[in-house]
Length: 171
Image (cartoon, rainbow, N blue to C red; front, side, top):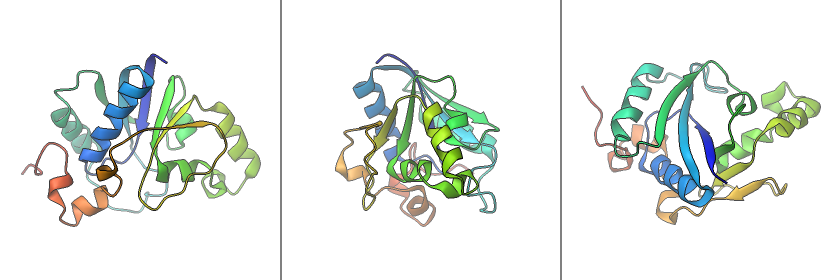
């Protein structure tokens, strides 16, 4: 599949695992371009303090200068189905794959969940330590080095700076 993919996330901050997932999606799915998309108000993180979106997008741009096929974008959309609209492939981590299948993110409605899943383009999922994927036949599992399965933005914020993409935070 060649085309244009979308990889939504908070990227607060961008990690080496995010980049490994992006590389795997490009290589394994034949993407010509991949957008890392940050929601202005992330679903289920509305009350969590985060770095400003503009700062996160700038950090992504800085850390991905050597990947001209990778771009940072912001969006007002929250649901992954809305963010993925118009793209050829949705790239997600295993934790986001679980959210895709959780009725809580659709106002508790199974019907709304099914409608959202039906709107999705093909999905490529990156494994994550300790997260079992639902088997609905829709997803392609990305082959990402197991060294990245434990990496998280939360751990970087708590001091695992070696997992931050592009080196230490500015300023």
